[in-house]
Amino acid sequence: MPNYKLLYFNVKARGESIRLIFAEAGIEFEDKRVEPSEWPEIKPTTPFGRVPVLYIDDKPPLAQSGAIAAYLGREFGLDAGSSLADAYAHMLFDSFDDFGSILPYMEEDPVKRKATVQELLEKQINPALDKMEKKFKAGGNDFLVGKKLTYVDLAFWNFCDVLSDFDKTFLTNFPTLDALCKRVAARPNIKKYVENRP
Ligand SMILES: N[C@@H](CCC(=O)N[C@@H](CS)C(=O)NCC(=O)O)C(=O)O
Image (cartoon, rainbow, N blue to C red):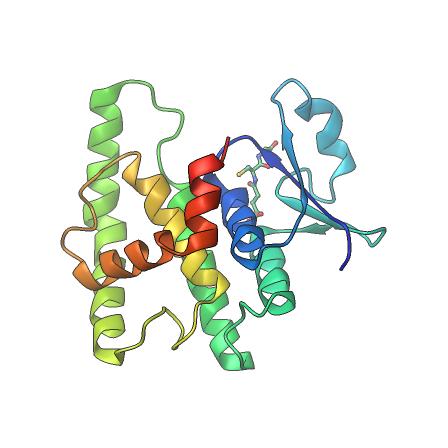
């Protein structure tokens, strides 16, 4: 097994999906959580000036959360099993990333924050979740891309976890997706990781 080092900030967001993949697979990695004060010095050492970045032994660093997640998913048997199914997994991963990246993390005014989240939910996130809910329910699978857990189920759980910090009730209209989130959260390695995470 290679030595893995993950560079990310001490927040949930993007890098957390990668940490969840390691946790589910039970694979050790160095979890380097960059402090804001360290970032100006570290940033120019990364391939594109952004994190997450995964260092795998002495190979060139691997940036972009989707590329890292797809790679680790494949390495740890958390892929979807075919090129097309993996492409759907990657599609969903990037879409959760798109939605995750528009949340108002920096808005400190609670009224404005709530209003922004409501608008994002109504105009962008809920319509997408509604389609996913219907498709997922009709497909009758246990997980987003088939019958087995893949890295994108972990990314979905992370997305829901982050979004629930803004709105606790957004999943109530999507019972099948809500059940999926609960199934992921109940997995022993995920439960243990979440209970102990910084
Ligand atoms: N598309 C990239 C986006 C990476 C990204 O924007 N990372 C943010 C943190 S979530 C970052 O590094 N921000 C610090 C900066 O841009 O200086 C990915 O999915 O990894």
